[in-house]
Length: 172
Image (cartoon, rainbow, N blue to C red; front, side):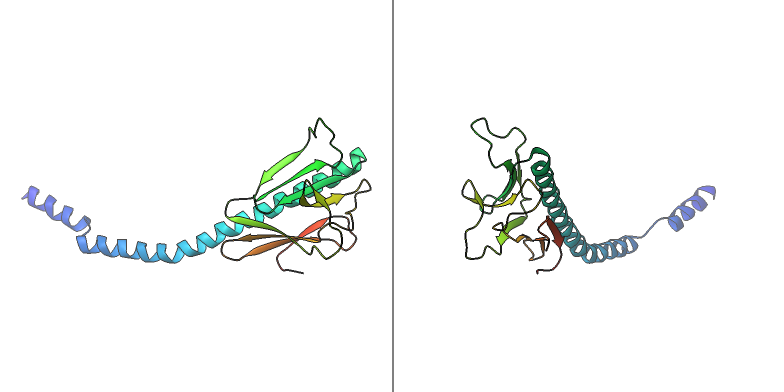
């Protein structure tokens, strides 16, 4: 009798196969709703992170131009998905403080607003020239665009006072 009572208690505490299938079905439904939202969130984080990295390197270029008293070039290689910072007159020894970074593999970088006149270039690539007084050269591009595969974008736009660039969520 004790053994039979123990088995009945065990059966009351256990889940049936139907209950387990229902729980798994609910988990599948919840996951199918959450995954697209999470993927958009992760893509947005990569875009924002890369925009902050670009902005930080631009600030470094501006700071180096002022502190070293010589123009700094912030170049962009759209085809290779790379960008960097180097002194304009690095000479034969090169620039020991030069920076070369690559864009996240899910993103594309573009130089916009090139205009029709002479444009700033460095090693045959579009470039932003930061002058020794901390301003941006007039012939430098006004906008850089970062875009992900879903079409979301962030723009780094030159400020009206030509003292740097700021990140925007909308094109200007």
